[in-house]
Image (cartoon, rainbow, N blue to C red):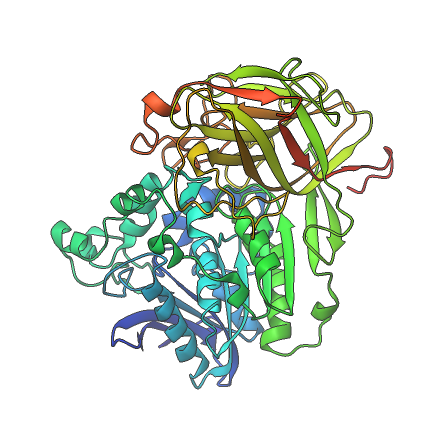
Length: 581
């Protein structure tokens, strides 16, 4: 134990879980003895790897654009996607960071999002709630991985868990984390080595050094490559070999209806991994006390800014300290709606989607490449080429400002000479000159508005779980296409918000591969992946997309009995001059 500034710090505290394994935790607490609420994180990114060293590009964004995120702290103890103890301990909290099994300083078999990992998390919560420095109330706060596993462990109902704040964290392992619409995301081929394998326990001297303790971030032992492989699954082979939703995926997907703890679900409009989960977690959990907040910008930014930290603190002060601070009077839903110029407008409500949302069906016309609220009487069809530019359908220039906020879907009638087709539906906004409006998304500096995906062989619908604006596919069997047969696809488009000015147009682009903005670049990169509107969430793994099948064009049918359409939560806006900046 050592005293650093206003904190008492204990490094590598052992936590013995139910099967006898020992996990290691760093504990940051107030110097003054007492019983304090606990904020706990548990995950595989390495508790001893500093934010600045581990993710320098993201850190530079905070430094350059959001100086308030760095103020009030020495930033020496910042770790990627976890709360900064220097911003919490002085306010009467204990911060506990645990390396999950097989990661960092915790030995064992690393198996991400597994039932074993969730049980370990449960045991860490119960350990923290029973310590002498704890008031018995444990809260969970973290981004991405450290948000996703909150849904998992909250569904297990550990008794000392008092509140959770999953900040931009998906909830469905198959539909959100691995396979969009049944199509494998190739992002994991880059992400897994760069984040999980980088700090696997046993890297020892081949790994990083903790700048505070001088100890090795990934444990004192230096194992051989063969030994390291024995301590982990063949993750990439596992996900490639499981195209259907099976028990492997179900064991890593929480039953959101089992989550009944107070929660603040903080989401981002434009993250092709996390956005859907934050909305689903809020809507489907059984918690009587639950709130939804949605913001924009890069996905980690507001977790660290004054905006985010003040909101987190008010929430946890209320539920972990019992503070009568007005949190319970806050609207259940706070949305930062997006304008095309990159600014935001706050909207509040009590439900998601918002009360009074009206869905309008807009129909595609293959004759004119238009998008209108009127169904064409005559049937038409057009070829959707295999290129990333695809085929685009647009509205006329809007006569008034318009708003899309909510859940969307597409109903398409397609046919192909191939046995299968991947259909990508991209929502775009075109300015008064016909150019794309690209917004800073959660990861991509020039992102699309939102996207939906579906592999045609996965077109079966779970009628009991589906609504017109949110079709749900079981993904448990495949039905091949028959050449010349027209089939109906109901495609979920991920929730979004965009306020479209008068004179702009709304566009729907259909492609058979990931849509990409045109141009020669250079394009920004992350994990070595060029980002051209879809960030790093591409679908180009050749093991999942045989070019002989999936690089072929398909035909879209419109009008008459095969009236392909999109369902939009499209609302008229007040006249210019009343807009709140």
